[in-house]
Amino acid sequence: MPLTANFNLYGTEMNNRYGTLASLVYTLDKPVGRSFGDVEYYQQRLGGTEGLILEPAVGNGRVYVPLLEAGFPVEGFDASDEMLGYCRDACAKRNLSASVTRQTFEDFAYDKSFAAVIIPAGSFQLITETASAIAVLRRFYACMAPGAKLMIDLDPIGSFFGPASSVRRWKTEAGDLLTLTDHRGETDYVAQTTLSYLRYELWRDGGLVASELDLFKLRWWGVDEFSMALQRAGFVDVVASGNYQHQRAPRNDDEVITFEAVRPA
Ligand SMILES: C[S@@+](CC[C@H](N)C(=O)[O-])C[C@H]1O[C@@H](n2cnc3c(N)ncnc32)[C@H](O)[C@@H]1O
View 1 (cartoon, rainbow, N blue to C red):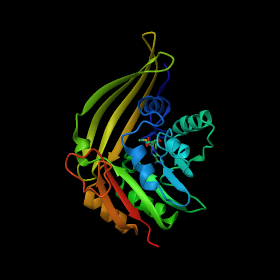
View 2: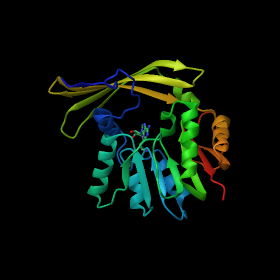
View 3: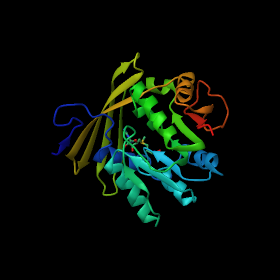
């Protein structure tokens, strides 16, 4: 049975890898176009944007492909070859030209500037060191045109303290069974991170054919804390909105908080 784990040859941890089974599960669970209100919200907020849009951590193209279909000129990057593969396939199936590259939050570089940068689905929380997160915000700033808009979704803090374990299952197109066992292992209240152990398993005819282990680490942010981080990186006009209702202040029971900020002209 092929078993892959997220440690490199030197035994160093590699978090948030989105490998083969993780990417397959993501695509089965959140296919292109599956919306949590975000697909419509981002399209509406991006209306009238003049110039290129960037989606870092573009993944399988869940939000990216509908943006392309709606006529937005959008580019993306992602750390996972497997996720990018699903994105490129989805574009090819629709005769859309995919402008996506393999880059990471930590090392992305562009020799052009963007009129908007969007990060839906809480992907920014995958950057778990505070100093790295601020550095990434500064690098977004550097690749944005004056007056450009940055939009970032964050999960509310309460969502980090839900049930500590879960098991979910999916059927693949080929009829195989995929399971995901999620166990929250550690919570660091000082670093504001949770570390979960994710075990993906692919079953065929009752036998286990592949398994993948992932260490999944996320950082939570307070609303004011993140607004201040954006300001520290140079952004202005920071607005935090709850549940995709623009300018409606976040509430305790919101499922998502969207931050919008502007690179000053
Ligand atoms: C929750 S998915 C979001 C995908 C897509 N944006 C969406 O809205 O459905 C998170 C994505 O972040 C990517 N990712 C994780 N760590 C990353 C990093 N350091 N740099 C760039 N992308 C990363 C993963 O490969 C994955 O595709």
